Image (tube, rainbow, N blue to C red; front, top):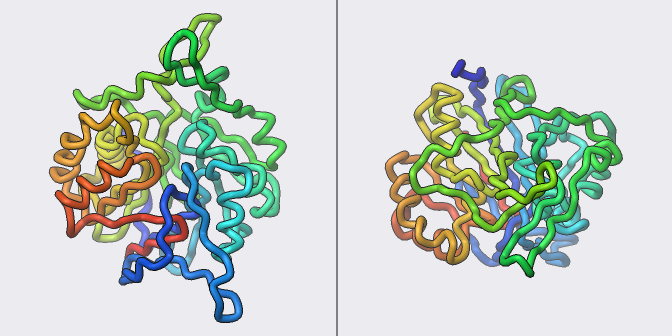
Length: 317
Protein backbone atom coordinates (compact mmCIF):
# COMPACT_ATOMS: atom_id res chain seq x y z
CA UNK A 1 0.00 0.00 0.00
CA UNK A 2 1.23 3.49 -0.87
CA UNK A 3 1.72 5.56 2.24
CA UNK A 4 -0.78 8.38 2.80
CA UNK A 5 0.69 11.86 3.15
CA UNK A 6 0.16 13.25 6.62
CA UNK A 7 1.59 16.66 7.44
CA UNK A 8 3.54 17.09 10.67
CA UNK A 9 1.71 19.37 13.11
CA UNK A 10 3.06 21.25 16.10
CA UNK A 11 0.00 21.03 18.36
CA UNK A 12 -3.19 18.99 18.62
CA UNK A 13 -6.14 19.90 20.86
CA UNK A 14 -9.02 17.50 21.42
CA UNK A 15 -12.06 18.92 23.20
CA UNK A 16 -14.53 16.17 24.10
CA UNK A 17 -18.03 17.49 23.46
CA UNK A 18 -19.72 14.26 24.54
CA UNK A 19 -18.59 11.16 26.43
CA UNK A 20 -20.12 8.69 28.87
CA UNK A 21 -18.59 10.19 32.02
CA UNK A 22 -18.35 13.50 33.84
CA UNK A 23 -16.79 14.39 37.19
CA UNK A 24 -16.91 18.07 38.04
CA UNK A 25 -14.57 17.83 41.03
CA UNK A 26 -11.62 15.92 39.51
CA UNK A 27 -9.14 18.81 40.09
CA UNK A 28 -6.40 17.04 38.10
CA UNK A 29 -5.51 19.66 35.51
CA UNK A 30 -1.99 19.55 34.12
CA UNK A 31 -0.09 20.50 30.95
CA UNK A 32 -2.14 17.98 28.93
CA UNK A 33 -5.49 17.81 30.75
CA UNK A 34 -7.90 20.72 31.24
CA UNK A 35 -11.19 19.77 32.91
CA UNK A 36 -14.39 21.68 32.27
CA UNK A 37 -15.40 24.27 34.84
CA UNK A 38 -18.30 26.15 33.27
CA UNK A 39 -18.77 29.38 35.20
CA UNK A 40 -21.13 32.27 34.66
CA UNK A 41 -20.71 35.41 36.71
CA UNK A 42 -18.38 33.48 38.98
CA UNK A 43 -20.95 30.78 39.67
CA UNK A 44 -21.39 27.20 38.49
CA UNK A 45 -24.81 27.35 36.85
CA UNK A 46 -24.63 24.46 34.36
CA UNK A 47 -23.24 20.96 34.28
CA UNK A 48 -21.58 19.26 31.37
CA UNK A 49 -23.85 16.44 30.19
CA UNK A 50 -22.60 12.86 29.95
CA UNK A 51 -24.35 10.47 27.56
CA UNK A 52 -23.66 7.14 25.89
CA UNK A 53 -22.21 8.82 22.83
CA UNK A 54 -19.15 10.57 21.50
CA UNK A 55 -18.24 13.84 19.83
CA UNK A 56 -15.00 15.80 19.77
CA UNK A 57 -13.64 19.05 18.40
CA UNK A 58 -10.14 18.45 17.03
CA UNK A 59 -7.72 21.29 16.30
CA UNK A 60 -4.32 21.01 14.63
CA UNK A 61 -1.78 23.82 14.48
CA UNK A 62 1.25 24.13 12.20
CA UNK A 63 3.24 27.25 11.35
CA UNK A 64 0.74 29.41 13.19
CA UNK A 65 -2.29 28.14 11.24
CA UNK A 66 -5.01 26.18 13.01
CA UNK A 67 -7.49 23.80 11.37
CA UNK A 68 -10.66 22.55 13.10
CA UNK A 69 -12.48 19.24 12.61
CA UNK A 70 -15.72 18.04 14.18
CA UNK A 71 -15.50 14.29 14.79
CA UNK A 72 -18.93 12.70 15.38
CA UNK A 73 -22.11 14.36 16.66
CA UNK A 74 -23.01 12.56 19.91
CA UNK A 75 -26.18 10.62 20.72
CA UNK A 76 -29.22 12.70 21.64
CA UNK A 77 -30.50 15.56 19.54
CA UNK A 78 -29.39 18.24 22.01
CA UNK A 79 -26.73 16.64 24.26
CA UNK A 80 -23.47 17.56 22.52
CA UNK A 81 -24.96 20.84 21.30
CA UNK A 82 -25.80 21.85 24.87
CA UNK A 83 -22.25 21.02 25.95
CA UNK A 84 -20.93 23.18 23.10
CA UNK A 85 -22.88 26.12 24.50
CA UNK A 86 -21.97 25.38 28.12
CA UNK A 87 -18.27 25.10 27.23
CA UNK A 88 -18.33 28.22 25.06
CA UNK A 89 -16.92 26.28 22.12
CA UNK A 90 -17.25 27.87 18.69
CA UNK A 91 -18.41 25.44 16.01
CA UNK A 92 -18.28 28.23 13.45
CA UNK A 93 -14.55 27.43 13.32
CA UNK A 94 -15.27 23.93 11.98
CA UNK A 95 -13.85 23.46 8.47
CA UNK A 96 -14.70 19.77 8.01
CA UNK A 97 -16.63 16.98 9.69
CA UNK A 98 -15.70 13.28 9.90
CA UNK A 99 -17.96 10.44 11.02
CA UNK A 100 -16.49 7.40 12.74
CA UNK A 101 -19.44 5.18 11.69
CA UNK A 102 -23.18 5.33 11.16
CA UNK A 103 -24.52 4.29 14.58
CA UNK A 104 -26.90 6.63 16.34
CA UNK A 105 -24.70 7.31 19.39
CA UNK A 106 -22.42 9.15 16.94
CA UNK A 107 -25.00 10.65 14.57
CA UNK A 108 -28.00 11.60 16.72
CA UNK A 109 -26.91 15.18 17.34
CA UNK A 110 -26.11 15.96 13.70
CA UNK A 111 -28.88 18.44 13.00
CA UNK A 112 -28.26 20.64 16.05
CA UNK A 113 -24.47 20.48 15.68
CA UNK A 114 -24.72 21.44 12.01
CA UNK A 115 -26.86 24.42 13.02
CA UNK A 116 -24.08 25.55 15.35
CA UNK A 117 -21.54 25.32 12.51
CA UNK A 118 -23.76 27.92 10.90
CA UNK A 119 -22.94 27.51 7.21
CA UNK A 120 -23.43 25.08 4.37
CA UNK A 121 -21.16 22.98 2.15
CA UNK A 122 -18.82 21.97 4.97
CA UNK A 123 -17.02 18.78 3.80
CA UNK A 124 -18.38 15.66 5.50
CA UNK A 125 -16.12 12.58 5.31
CA UNK A 126 -17.80 9.20 5.74
CA UNK A 127 -17.53 5.57 4.64
CA UNK A 128 -20.44 4.72 2.29
CA UNK A 129 -21.46 1.73 4.45
CA UNK A 130 -22.62 4.22 7.10
CA UNK A 131 -25.84 4.47 5.07
CA UNK A 132 -26.52 0.73 5.14
CA UNK A 133 -30.16 0.11 6.11
CA UNK A 134 -31.76 -1.58 7.89
CA UNK A 135 -29.18 -2.17 10.62
CA UNK A 136 -30.07 -3.80 13.90
CA UNK A 137 -28.82 -5.74 16.90
CA UNK A 138 -30.05 -9.33 16.74
CA UNK A 139 -30.32 -10.96 20.15
CA UNK A 140 -32.54 -13.77 18.84
CA UNK A 141 -34.92 -14.41 15.96
CA UNK A 142 -37.65 -12.80 18.05
CA UNK A 143 -35.74 -9.90 19.57
CA UNK A 144 -34.04 -7.28 17.43
CA UNK A 145 -33.25 -3.63 18.15
CA UNK A 146 -33.11 -1.33 15.15
CA UNK A 147 -30.60 1.45 14.64
CA UNK A 148 -32.15 4.71 13.42
CA UNK A 149 -31.54 5.32 9.74
CA UNK A 150 -28.78 7.59 8.52
CA UNK A 151 -29.45 8.76 4.98
CA UNK A 152 -27.67 10.87 2.40
CA UNK A 153 -30.68 13.18 2.37
CA UNK A 154 -30.17 13.82 6.09
CA UNK A 155 -26.59 14.90 5.38
CA UNK A 156 -27.73 17.28 2.66
CA UNK A 157 -30.52 18.67 4.83
CA UNK A 158 -27.92 19.43 7.51
CA UNK A 159 -26.05 21.51 4.93
CA UNK A 160 -23.00 19.26 4.79
CA UNK A 161 -21.15 18.36 1.60
CA UNK A 162 -20.87 14.59 1.35
CA UNK A 163 -17.49 12.97 0.64
CA UNK A 164 -17.77 9.17 0.67
CA UNK A 165 -14.59 7.12 0.79
CA UNK A 166 -13.50 3.65 1.81
CA UNK A 167 -9.84 4.64 1.46
CA UNK A 168 -7.56 6.74 3.64
CA UNK A 169 -8.16 10.39 2.80
CA UNK A 170 -6.28 13.51 3.96
CA UNK A 171 -8.37 16.35 5.36
CA UNK A 172 -7.70 19.98 6.25
CA UNK A 173 -4.55 20.60 4.25
CA UNK A 174 -3.22 17.13 5.07
CA UNK A 175 -3.06 17.75 8.84
CA UNK A 176 -5.64 15.04 9.69
CA UNK A 177 -6.13 11.67 8.00
CA UNK A 178 -9.52 10.00 7.63
CA UNK A 179 -8.39 6.39 7.96
CA UNK A 180 -11.11 4.73 5.89
CA UNK A 181 -12.06 1.06 6.15
CA UNK A 182 -9.85 -0.81 8.63
CA UNK A 183 -8.77 -4.40 7.88
CA UNK A 184 -9.39 -7.05 10.53
CA UNK A 185 -5.89 -8.46 10.94
CA UNK A 186 -5.41 -9.51 14.56
CA UNK A 187 -6.35 -13.01 15.71
CA UNK A 188 -8.49 -11.84 18.66
CA UNK A 189 -10.46 -8.80 17.53
CA UNK A 190 -13.32 -10.67 15.88
CA UNK A 191 -15.90 -7.90 15.91
CA UNK A 192 -19.33 -7.54 17.50
CA UNK A 193 -21.56 -10.58 16.82
CA UNK A 194 -24.90 -8.84 17.46
CA UNK A 195 -25.13 -6.32 14.57
CA UNK A 196 -26.91 -7.52 11.44
CA UNK A 197 -28.21 -5.90 8.28
CA UNK A 198 -30.10 -6.73 5.13
CA UNK A 199 -28.31 -7.06 1.81
CA UNK A 200 -30.01 -8.19 -1.41
CA UNK A 201 -32.99 -9.26 0.66
CA UNK A 202 -30.94 -11.51 2.94
CA UNK A 203 -29.90 -11.08 6.55
CA UNK A 204 -26.13 -10.96 7.04
CA UNK A 205 -23.76 -10.16 9.89
CA UNK A 206 -22.90 -6.47 9.90
CA UNK A 207 -19.13 -6.19 10.33
CA UNK A 208 -19.55 -2.39 10.62
CA UNK A 209 -17.13 -1.86 7.76
CA UNK A 210 -17.78 1.89 8.01
CA UNK A 211 -15.94 1.99 11.34
CA UNK A 212 -12.95 4.32 11.10
CA UNK A 213 -10.73 6.75 12.97
CA UNK A 214 -8.81 9.97 12.40
CA UNK A 215 -5.03 10.27 12.67
CA UNK A 216 -2.59 13.13 13.22
CA UNK A 217 1.22 13.27 13.23
CA UNK A 218 2.62 15.37 16.08
CA UNK A 219 6.10 16.77 15.54
CA UNK A 220 8.82 14.63 17.16
CA UNK A 221 6.16 12.67 19.11
CA UNK A 222 4.38 10.39 16.62
CA UNK A 223 0.82 9.48 15.71
CA UNK A 224 -2.29 10.60 17.55
CA UNK A 225 -5.12 8.15 16.79
CA UNK A 226 -8.72 9.01 17.70
CA UNK A 227 -11.44 6.39 17.29
CA UNK A 228 -15.20 6.59 17.70
CA UNK A 229 -15.94 3.00 18.76
CA UNK A 230 -13.10 1.00 17.15
CA UNK A 231 -15.52 -1.73 16.08
CA UNK A 232 -12.70 -3.00 13.86
CA UNK A 233 -10.60 -3.41 17.02
CA UNK A 234 -8.39 -0.71 18.50
CA UNK A 235 -5.23 -2.75 17.85
CA UNK A 236 -6.27 -3.31 14.23
CA UNK A 237 -6.89 0.43 14.04
CA UNK A 238 -3.48 1.42 15.37
CA UNK A 239 -1.65 -1.10 13.21
CA UNK A 240 -3.48 0.07 10.11
CA UNK A 241 -2.62 3.69 10.93
CA UNK A 242 1.04 2.65 11.13
CA UNK A 243 0.77 0.82 7.80
CA UNK A 244 -0.98 3.68 6.03
CA UNK A 245 1.28 6.48 7.30
CA UNK A 246 4.59 4.60 7.50
CA UNK A 247 5.05 6.03 11.01
CA UNK A 248 5.50 3.50 13.81
CA UNK A 249 5.90 5.88 16.74
CA UNK A 250 2.63 6.24 18.65
CA UNK A 251 1.99 9.22 20.91
CA UNK A 252 -1.72 8.88 21.72
CA UNK A 253 -4.35 6.16 21.38
CA UNK A 254 -7.72 7.63 22.28
CA UNK A 255 -11.36 6.79 21.73
CA UNK A 256 -14.02 4.20 22.20
CA UNK A 257 -12.39 0.75 22.31
CA UNK A 258 -15.69 -1.17 22.47
CA UNK A 259 -14.67 -3.54 25.25
CA UNK A 260 -17.77 -3.11 27.40
CA UNK A 261 -19.94 -6.06 28.37
CA UNK A 262 -19.55 -9.85 28.52
CA UNK A 263 -18.97 -10.33 24.78
CA UNK A 264 -15.77 -8.27 24.89
CA UNK A 265 -14.45 -8.67 28.43
CA UNK A 266 -12.49 -11.82 27.44
CA UNK A 267 -10.20 -9.72 25.21
CA UNK A 268 -9.54 -6.86 27.65
CA UNK A 269 -6.29 -8.41 28.90
CA UNK A 270 -5.00 -9.13 25.40
CA UNK A 271 -5.93 -5.67 24.16
CA UNK A 272 -4.16 -4.09 27.12
CA UNK A 273 -1.05 -6.21 26.50
CA UNK A 274 -0.99 -5.17 22.84
CA UNK A 275 -1.35 -1.52 23.81
CA UNK A 276 1.57 -1.94 26.21
CA UNK A 277 3.63 -3.40 23.35
CA UNK A 278 2.77 -0.41 21.15
CA UNK A 279 3.94 1.80 24.04
CA UNK A 280 2.11 5.07 23.37
CA UNK A 281 2.83 8.05 25.58
CA UNK A 282 -0.90 8.25 26.39
CA UNK A 283 -3.79 5.78 26.41
CA UNK A 284 -7.20 7.43 26.71
CA UNK A 285 -10.18 5.04 26.56
CA UNK A 286 -13.55 6.73 26.10
CA UNK A 287 -17.23 6.05 25.48
CA UNK A 288 -17.75 2.29 24.89
CA UNK A 289 -14.41 1.12 26.32
CA UNK A 290 -16.28 0.07 29.45
CA UNK A 291 -15.50 0.31 33.15
CA UNK A 292 -13.56 -2.95 33.40
CA UNK A 293 -11.29 -2.13 30.47
CA UNK A 294 -10.71 1.40 31.71
CA UNK A 295 -9.75 0.11 35.17
CA UNK A 296 -7.45 -2.54 33.70
CA UNK A 297 -5.65 -0.03 31.49
CA UNK A 298 -5.23 2.37 34.37
CA UNK A 299 -3.79 -0.47 36.48
CA UNK A 300 -1.41 -1.80 33.81
CA UNK A 301 -0.42 1.56 32.26
CA UNK A 302 -0.69 4.07 35.12
CA UNK A 303 1.80 6.59 33.73
CA UNK A 304 0.22 6.56 30.27
CA UNK A 305 -3.44 6.44 31.27
CA UNK A 306 -5.73 9.48 31.18
CA UNK A 307 -9.35 9.31 32.33
CA UNK A 308 -11.42 11.17 29.78
CA UNK A 309 -14.65 13.03 30.49
CA UNK A 310 -17.20 15.09 28.64
CA UNK A 311 -15.88 18.63 28.53
CA UNK A 312 -12.21 17.69 28.92
CA UNK A 313 -9.69 19.41 26.66
CA UNK A 314 -6.47 17.54 25.91
CA UNK A 315 -3.49 19.45 24.53
CA UNK A 316 -0.56 17.67 22.90
CA UNK A 317 2.45 19.70 21.81
